[in-house]
Length: 212
Image (cartoon, rainbow, N blue to C red; front, side, top):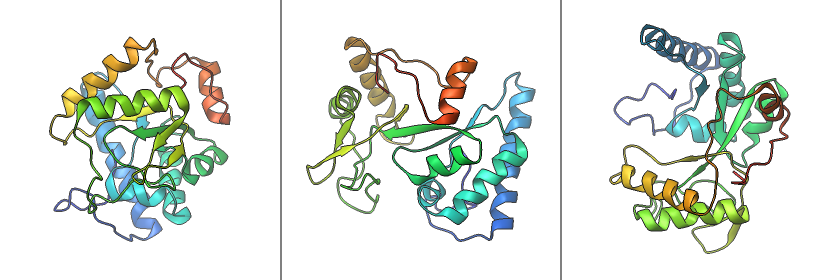
């Protein structure tokens, strides 16, 4: 969960590091976590940038390229998780990274498919039933309702619930229960078979009962 070095703002304030700084910082953060994971008997298998960095690299080719470079220099087998529908997914695929497209259960979307700024009313959702309904709708239709009521097409492989939101556990449970009750199969995207990894690498994802 790499981020800008913005401790006071929890990584949610925009920064403009040089390419050299950003590549080095991403490598440092992942490298430190890989060491801790090894000591605990496990390993890091994917990278999801956090906060302002996540939103910036979704559309900024320079900073996106820096993060991709950092992952390739450290471990080309790391999976990059990125905003569903963003150009970053194709930029990463073109350079050989595996990618996972992510949808947000507890965030509102703009009509263009971006996340509504946290500074705006209604940007963060808290009701477990509403969140669960939205994700079942996304899985069933491939679309999600934007903040203005319009429908946005969204192809995603993973669902995020923010752990620092009040009621995060209740929302995650509600999403899982609603999807499983509808017959949706939930499967991990790491530890995949070679065929599935190749599908992700080329952008041709296999079809699961969930559609997500």
